[in-house]
Image (cartoon, rainbow, N blue to C red; front, side, top):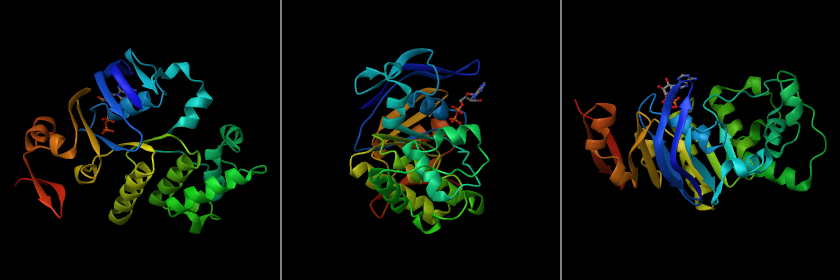
Length: 262
Ligand SMILES: Nc1ncnc2c1ncn2[C@@H]1O[C@H](COP(=O)(O)OP(=O)(O)OP(=O)(O)O)[C@@H](O)[C@H]1O
């Protein structure tokens, strides 16, 4: 379990996350939603242990996150930023291999140079292959990242994160740049990953994609407005209060659909 306990976090001088308490479980797909500036990215970075907290704490498996080494954290919690910088001249498969720790230091030193990786173990190779299959990136394994579209690069970033075999996948707006088919496909992939035991936490702007999550957290001005099932969070009252927009929430094909009025 990954938990925020009465967590407050600053972004610059601003208190962007205020007294947030929330629990994210393995085996569940959780979505963090809320308007621009609500504090979603700041919360995600804090959950990944990438930003100092002002008060409260983040706990992973009952232990405060700072008690884990950087390596332990990186192994357990894979974080994907809104815009991931990838080594553009490097082949896709080698970028995914970065998720296994291979060549990471080289990338840090020479971010724009092609990486040439040393030998990988059989375990590494299998994890890389599996991550590429899961993200439908295997067919461009030998192409350079620079030759891919934004959406394709996004899937490569996800493959790199999955290759680490983390316990939790923390994704900040993973459907950015994705067309409708790939966005739906990604959400389905995340649901499947959660179904096989991974903890998935994703910041999503599209409420109809978020409706497919098991657990939702609605933030507004750094505070939790509601959390729980899609039915309990995606109500016209909550959405009007937070987005200032009147919406209908209807059921269609067994799913909740948010439709703006007017
Ligand atoms: N480096 C910074 N310095 C000052 N304020 C910041 C900084 N980074 C973010 N903020 C502010 O903190 C608040 C929360 O930002 P955050 O990026 O967490 O929101 P968000 O919900 O992810 O927004 P979006 O949906 O637009 O990506 C915003 O008001 C933002 O302007």
